[in-house]
Image (cartoon, rainbow, N blue to C red):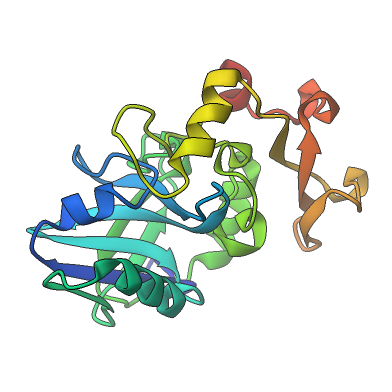
Length: 231
């Protein structure tokens, strides 16, 4: 059997009234359109707290997120819920699956592969997913993204932000950076041997790679993935 289960991901289920309206005022992407979408919950200053994929399951919404961050994300969303009749909880009956597919359905980049929600069964594919994701220069998760400005995480280039949907937490600074073209630094996947210790976010010695947070002018053409160059 092909290994597909991403054991380091969890699924949060949102059930209740006006779920899309609830998330629409919180997250960076437009959840009123076709799902899935990649989105983030930011600080009021526009820095990343959590990133996740939003899926539809009938009238419910599902958040495909990091397993370690799932309880904290549930608590944060529950703060914003106030008195709304909405249930927010990790759904242990569901897991995230992935397999390589050059024409996949990942909303960030089709080359990331095919992704789906299903029973949390099967062999782990976490190592294969990490290698594939980094080979395409795509960053995700708390260790790589946290406390950075969302556009520095290549959110615009990877379809993680809507500039037309209206207000959300952190929207003002994010929109201002876009309008003024003031994205001075970006995340980039680099060979570990060339990583700048002062700019390194995380190293993956087993893959010989690292994620650096570099000034745009310090990202050589050879380090830019095709999607970044095209954008």
